[in-house]
Length: 124
Image 1: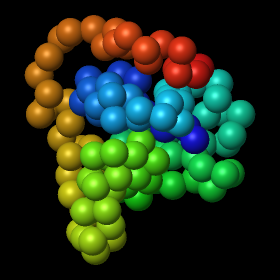
Image 2: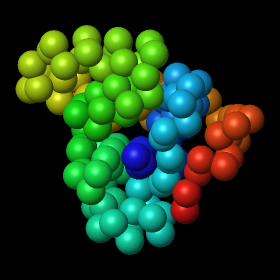
Image 3: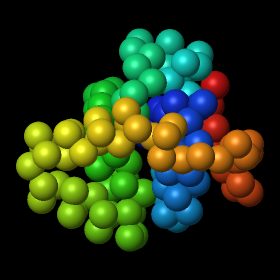
Image 4: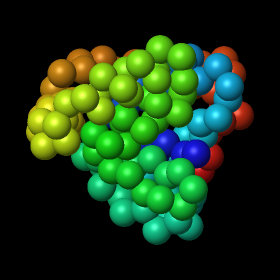
């Protein structure tokens, strides 16, 4: 299972670190939307929407986030379940709002260096 993300977005990088911490079973891999792995799987490089791939099926936007949390397990599974209870239209509206405003919401110039235990889960 691969989580595709905007590699230029500090909010996205923070979300990946959080997913990595939740992923106690080391099931998730991470790859940038503009990388070779995304190109190889024909994932459209839409930097306003993360993608999640499981068993060849591609999920986008809030459904990608929900699936990533569910697959991370533990507290991530609880978050995924709560998200599933919300109507898809409402989830996607909230996701799109955050995606459009993410660079304004996160005002940090820090480098997004992967934390320990994450580097080996990063694909290109």
